[in-house]
Length: 246
Image (cartoon, rainbow, N blue to C red; front, side):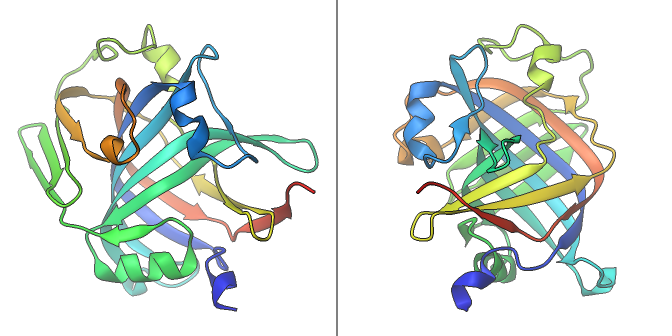
């Protein structure tokens, strides 16, 4: 009974005031062991695989259908691998596999871990914005980023595997599906997100530090793109399960 609660038993809605996302490229061999066998890496030129670090300010998060005043505001940091999944019906879905989720609110961590498999923990999160410069940091998580959102005509980061923003845009979302695998039951859980007004805008990164790579023993992160989206109505459908494997 309690285990089934983690399978996204009801739809959830929220408003994203902003979502600042850094996407890092790794040689695909570095990420292959981090995803379950039911998934495959979503790669670029069959060489690069990607992890997104999403920093999201949400408003009014609540079960879908409830009034806004019953929702909660929180900040989320999520680490997600770009993946693909082929359903039992043969449909190929593109989406994300969650490695870790962090939030600034104990309430969100508690209920997030009750109703999802997203591995929430409560951390310190500090965000400052001044004259187009944005800084987000967490001492507990070992994360620090500094971005300039005022610049226009931003090019892709140096050493990115993408030659231009048109190529990078494919890995700037939106990715409608998130996947979880429960090996003891041999079940894949599919959560579909529905959003409006998804218009990512590239931003210039001035500095960044992501200590999470060290805990995964990842040696060669390359910043592939950086973008921000703002003012996004969003909701997640109730989770759907299907059996995978024999």
